[in-house]
Length: 151
Image 1 (cartoon, rainbow, N blue to C red):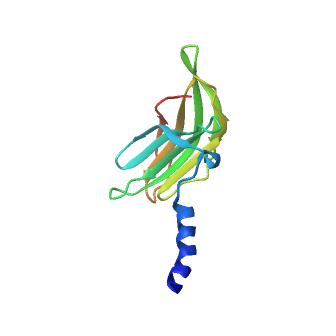
Image 2 (cartoon, rainbow, N blue to C red; image 1 turned 90 degrees about the vertical axis):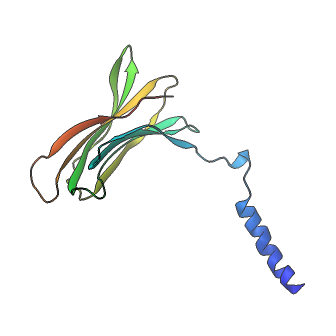
């Protein structure tokens, strides 16, 4: 009997933590949209993270040395959001541009939050470079474009 009295509050507390919450406590819903990655030795990715609760988006870019291959230093230099308008891609925002140098394994950057204008199509562009680990010079450059996303 004493054990039951001791366990009852703990079981109740656990049930409250594990039980699904109702709509009143809905959290912000985000989803990766248009993520596109290429490469086997150096992975280059660009995507949009869309927040449907607040109808906004954030652009991401990443470049990283893949495990198990040759070693590369990597650097991400820029992220842009483009909007498809009047039959062509137009730069909407330059959300990240920096040169914090070379990184031994990965460089992941995100832009600012931007409002997502309904029924418009967007994509992310990112600039990245890579070179053999421990070497100097500019390395190999590539601009990577994400798949498109329509709000």
